[in-house]
Amino acid sequence: MIGMNFESFLSILILGLIAAVVLHYAVRYRMLSGFDGFLGKWIAGWIGAWLGSPVLGHWAFRISNVYVIPGIIGAFAAAFAVTASMKAAATATVTVPEKVPAAQFEMRKVS
Image (cartoon, rainbow, N blue to C red):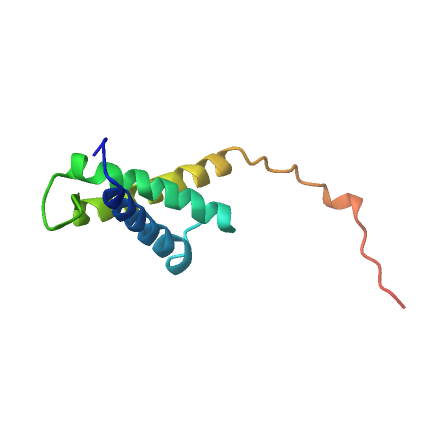
């Protein structure tokens, strides 16, 4: 798959696109809400689909020298893993503000 032809590249690109669309729009599992979050999932899905066959094996049917089932599983796994790790990193770096003592604020009745 390292020296792939253009048809294989397009097949892997479409598998990554399917994974990105399902995770971003159907499931709404997002690290960023705009197009940049979708594009990040698409790139991760492409890499996952590219690594799907070498990691998961060569089984089921293939389209233009790309095994579809391992490719789509790899695309979903990579897109989900990247999104989950980005969400975890964002959660780990969030600082919680200190609580303000309640004595500083006073409630008054407006007449």
